[in-house]
Length: 255
Image (cartoon, rainbow, N blue to C red):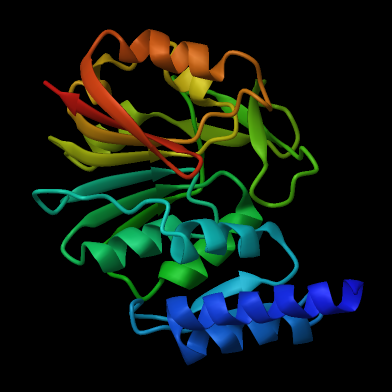
């Protein structure tokens, strides 16, 4: 009986992969099963201009299903966005989704973890209209240390430390990104930063909030108390409406 249930479950998975991505989806599903833990899996599909590399048996697979399979960042917009900032870009799947959905947009991707960042570079190197920053996002210039929360490569967080702390990295602020790239307007600001949303929305937010149209954010109160509270305390200073999609809150700001 248990074997029959498992077989039906697997057949349903195969069917869903075929319905979403055709033959390529089925091949991707079987590659996951046949490859060893330390292998990478290459995914190709006509919706995406270039192949995507994932680390098998890692949280990369979960991110793939959230972002590309379920399309958690899909939006119905009147105008195509021109500037998208991806905070917590991980291995680049959300950036890839945006770059293919909106081919004329410019994406700025920020990811603190060096291993994730290397795969971000691999996955986006053939896209000319993306900039990548290997930094942790923060509300001021400081030094940060990456904390492994034993949640896989999608669950790293950062804490502020002294500049002489081993393996520390430099922060970057949204105000810096705006100044460096001469940004006048942020069409979409995607935020998935594992608890650092507290610092991001705590101070020094006036400039970038005032030019942001849409915020897509995943809050992490289950990792760190106060994330949602700080976010909404800041958000109520502005005119907004919001909806949900998957694990994300989507906020539409009017200025």
